[in-house]
Amino acid sequence: MSAVTNPATVAECLRVGAGFSQSDRAWIAEQFATLNARLAGFHADATELEVSVKDRAAKGQKVTLECWIAGRQKIVTTSTEEDLHAALNDVRDDLRRRLNDAKTRQEPRHNKHLRDTGPQPDDQQVGNTEPARADAETA
Image (tube, rainbow, N blue to C red):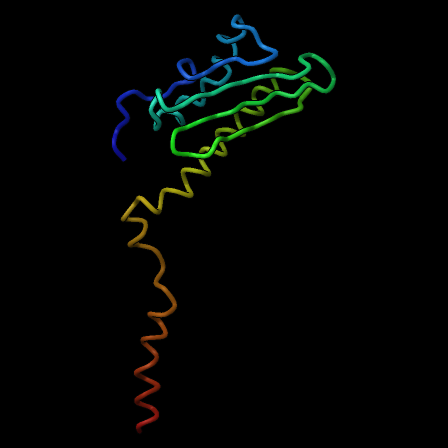
């Protein structure tokens, strides 16, 4: 994979939505800092994150983290944890998992080494047994 010239970071790509103020942004970016390593493989100008909370500090609060990366489907993670800190950590960890899963699904397609060292298809094994069967029939 070629190096990204302007890697995405949480601080650069994060927007705060409903339920959060701009003063919360720095604190949230700090909570999401562990995503930086995962986002670094994407261009900053093609990556967006938005976090929002519905009914903040209420019993039924819902935190939502949305991630848009150009050329990929939007990823939405949610948490209904009552503690805001725990809810933010929950959506962060879920996004990291889903980004890792998406990368794993795409990797073999773009990695010739992984394609070439995979298990042999069953039709090649069948091809090896065909001549033996043909010899047995003619004998």
